Length: 248
Image 1 (spheres, helix red, strand yellow):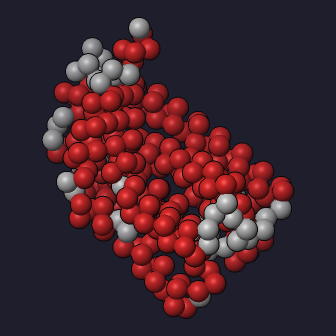
Image 2 (cartoon, rainbow, N blue to C red; image 1 turned 30 degrees about the vertical axis):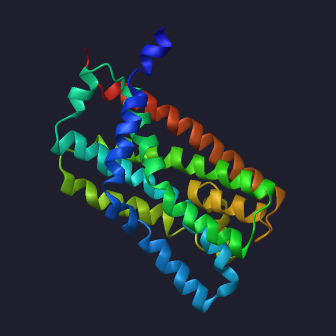
């Protein structure tokens, strides 16, 4: 009974958030511009790297969902002043966090399915690679959604939040080897990129798909780092949602 109350209202808020986001079709489309442009350039300039870039586009798109959580949660709290109303309702704080993150995941999934279809045409994934891709994308979503939600609670002005959203997207999605292979990274930097969630996910999927070999040690470090980051951060997101809820 207590567990049910802790998650009360989450299903309704999840469905509501999906409906709200599907009406923002232009935002969904614009989220594909960066990976779409990179895919076109790679297809023209380095076609042999296209499967790696497509996997990178999937990872990048999943991380971008978290930044949508950042903007949406901040918009609800700062512009609409609805945050306290939600927390005063039967909707639990963790239900609010998971509902908004899950709604964003479903709403922004269609473009990723298109990219996945292109990847299957160019470089079909086997069972192991497919399962690795699904697990890694969910882990990136958990990490990114938590980062986005936590950052959204730290500021009181939307204009202050926008630069941080762009900074996080570039820091995690563009700089590390997400759209390009691990072999292009200098050896002295490889230990670092293996523990960055986005690059760890891309490296694991590329290895499982047979696109780039990695050592057993590199795969272990990337897998453990990604799993620990996803579980720890998502649990922290639930804790943070409870902590930021107004006492009733």
